[in-house]
Length: 115
Length: 110
Image (cartoon, rainbow over all chains, first blue to last red; front, side, top):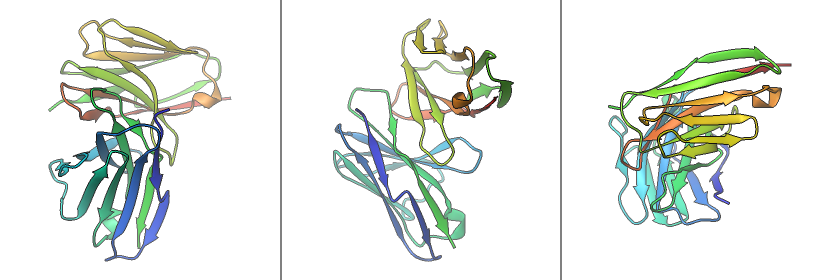
């Protein structure tokens, strides 16, 4: 149980285009989903927290207009990187938790490369 | 701002040896999780600890939560090459967000 999937697993795009990443909880209802970014050889940095049906809460320094997050259902959250630039290239990971539980379950990550 | 320091940052040992990784915070955890991450993959949950002084075992891995809930350790007995990976502690500090530690990159040499 507690499986989280992400799609796509890797994406290469041209500078200036937008990329959407999906995060799904496959066997549980995720009241809260989180989006992280990880640079090579570094730990995970939280970008934003999203609760189903509410606007996402972004961490300091994360541009909400650049990283659009939608959490329209209890099993799906999306992250859209708008007008991507090479500096947005990174490993993006989502996680999900259910109400009242501390534990977060992570997706397999999406490798974004912007040319 | 809560900080989570992990030590050591890098560890390379021979197969069959024992090792301990530490996770320390300046604040009290509501709960703490340990994850292992392989290159190009997401973190995989190993354990969640909530109660001060708690000890949990997962095969050759033993996790301990400090009495004051400000530190934790992960001990691996008879390490195997399959234990190689990035070990991350992550804590909740009274809210739903996880703060990740700096990570310990473990390499087990066959």
